[in-house]
Length: 497
Image 1 (cartoon, rainbow, N blue to C red):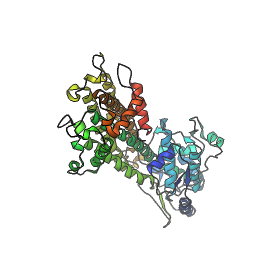
Image 2: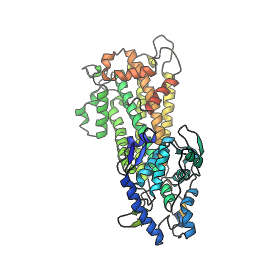
Image 3: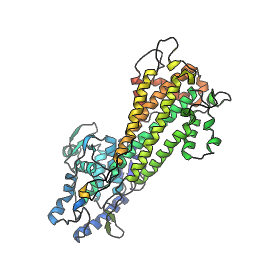
Image 4: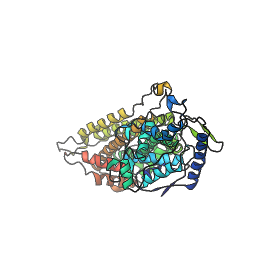
């Protein structure tokens, strides 16, 4: 059971609940904060105080007051008028993560929504019902379009999928599960639409995948170092301390642990005084990614436990004030830093793979093919590896930013964060595929070098795991299934485990 409080949600718990492995509950103190903030909204309505999106219109119409008739239906109108998300459906775990994040941040008591909104989100989560939301619609200035699409499903006018992936009209799907569609009160519609939980959810799911892929890249690099009989001097703690960057220190420490007990630590074991940069600079290259991932993790902890509502209710003072907390520029920049760090990571991977295949560098048979076999070994697989890198480089391009023309010029800036966050998930998947290639190639190089299990040390388990997924290449055969099998295991966290 994951109990949401509004203040202490973390990434592992969020991802577990988003994947449906834990149920979700709401802390009573959070619901009490929601009740108190709702009183402020009710007072503002009764006193006819101008409140954006509650007693006035939205966007360019924010200066127009709403009459009593319009006010009664405005929450539903808010969702209907903005539920325009298009394209393929977002992944189920992303939508569920967005629902969890919205429920959690509602408990902070700054949205002014009724407690029924948070309870309905949790009821649908625990019944394994997921709104269908298209991937296209948000500019990173709140996630109005996809959020409204999600919210409309909660009131019974969109689509939902069941636990087995069957989609249907959301009202029918909820009633079949014993849940009545959500009835909206004033402010509730805007509370479901005007916040940044969706882009935060995209980033959280992307970060989880990137963490798995980074660990796989670390593992593949360690196996490559052993297979190459590389020089481990650049991984020495005393040398790295001469330029004390935390990322490179952590990345190197992890690889030292992976290689503990291996023959590489024996004096004279290294074949070269200085290896190619793709081996020698692993601490610096992987350290860059490690530091970027850590920065994103820290930022997302804030995003998961903070209000991005506009307007925001300050219950202690009875105020409802306009904010800019929905604007996701810092998240966009931080995610893009991770995306670019994986460029350095994967370029080095491709370089290492190529060195294994080149006898001038590896002192092993050409393309790691068995001698006199007539095979080109792994040479054709290099085309696949380069294609993976090309696709990753494309995904890592910066998100475009332009002066927005939305809301008749009122909403004239955007962040591009959803594009960056969507790219992060794609980059993580592509990185897992390239790590799968490096693991298979490094395992073959180890076998051809005749390294014994005793000389592998702690990393012998990794070599055994790779060989359980992919047999040695003794004659030409398709390797797509092997690469896919290992990449899937990486993306599911099997290698991390």
